[in-house]
Amino acid sequence: MQVRVRNLGPSGDFIESNSLTFLVGTEPPTLTSVTGQPSPIIAGSVSAPFTVTVNGSGFTPATQIRVNFQGRPTTYVNQNQVIGTVLPADVASPGFVPITVENPNSVDSTPFQLPVLFPIPALTQISPSSLTAQVALNAQPVQITVSGSNFGQNATNLLDTATVLVNGTPVVTQYVSASQLTALIPANFIATPGVLQITVANPQPNLAASNVAALFIVNPVPIISSLEAGNVSWNPNTPPNSTFSQAVIITGANFSPNAVTWVNLPCDNLGFRKALSTVRNSSGQIVATIPIRCAGTYSIEVENPQPGGGLSAPAPLVVPNITSSAMAPQ
Image (cartoon, rainbow, N blue to C red):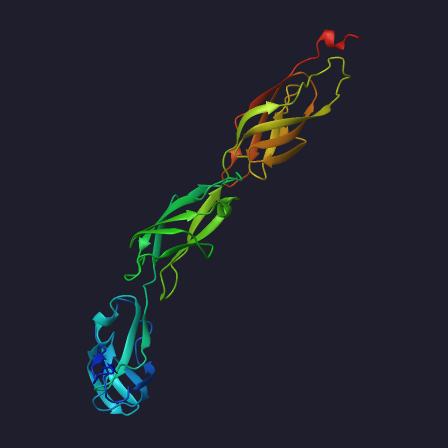
């Protein structure tokens, strides 16, 4: 039926609107539930048609079940139930497939959304398999590549893709293909050594996340670039076995929060021993307190603990004897 609106003028002329078409037919049926479908339905895994039972009201022998708004073979049971067929092609892609019922000269019922799930992704490799702990305050995210299979991408929204999770938290992920993703690991996740759990989750609807792969975070090897101990010197007239403590500013890089300073004294054959104290100011500076027992060249190293870590190259600290002129009374 077409409906128009007409405005009449004073002389009997009129202006008529464009027309609107209304369908006059039977009341649409009501859909309350759909049962009988396989559970779960994994996209692409259904190889044969299956039937679903649609429950509701207002069904007639002419009622038709529609899948994704396409008519499907329908069997009328009674006014509250019909049975329809879903084809493998209907559930070949992940997403929500609308199932409706329609009477002749009517419109579709409210749809039931049939979930067709993304398959469970499989994670086979992370590259690199370990990262160096980002100990600097201004550390940047680090990119990894995740390889595997069944990494999903929503066909209607290409930005809705499989996501990499670190210890269960989603991180920025770039979809490359169904077998490869790249992800940015935030610096705060890799500030300290340990093991991160990496998984991949497909877009909704999905069944479950992937298996877990381990990403190892290891300490870097420390680097000493300079030592500063002021004008430290040794008085040769000091009584035997005397010692004084000296603060040494160690500048470099990759000093972990638990770094330890070691020192080798030129006065004995005991080798390296721990400094009296190590205070880390930043990833690039340590203040260590060492014992001074004689003049000579002291070797200083910084060690980061495992995993990874290790000793820096030794750096020399020269402690000269006080000159005779400096010791002379003024």
